Length: 234
Ligand code: URA
Image (cartoon, rainbow, N blue to C red; front, top):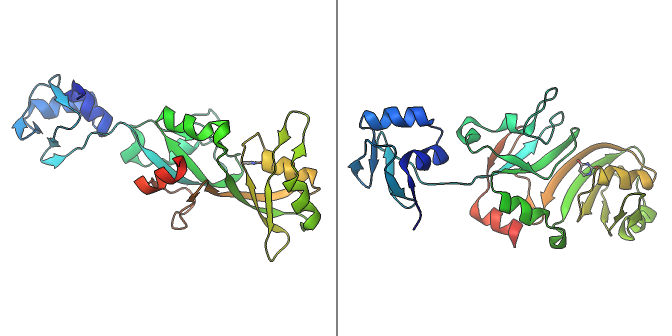
């Protein structure tokens, strides 16, 4: 069983700062397994029942968020000029210091995952896993059957060869779904361009078996459920 300092337990699992934790401990507001603890350095188990002002604070190290990324945000944790996706993380998750899993272009919207779990990020990015990403794109020109074939047969670029991709044309031939299993820089836009079309807008709607929650407005985010997490890693 892993033991750690009480202040570490609480600073990882809640938004309390070390200073606040010291104050709360000194003023008898923290209990561990029903016993008041005044020493923030006391060692506690991960499984301990820790309460602050009577409220249970379960131990957690990692968080996994689904964001509906709006246009205009960089998939980064900081930037001197532009807003970044971590600006959109609600206050209650800020202390987890999440980062984006992969990236979407500044003008792309839709499903972006954020976590502080490096192993999760690595597992999803692992090329052999070939996690499929599904996009909805609006094109300047209608797509046709010959484009479906072009996408399916893979495309050669100076810097990489795109694997076979799925192009699904909707009732409106200028609106398509595209599924790719890699994530090269501007890949969808470049594939469309090679087929003679310009992408006017792009939205990621799914990663593997995980779909963007339609209840999330652009800029909103929520935690993944355990089921959703396993959908991604299965
Ligand atoms: N392909 C692109 O061209 N842009 C993205 O943001 C994602 C995939």
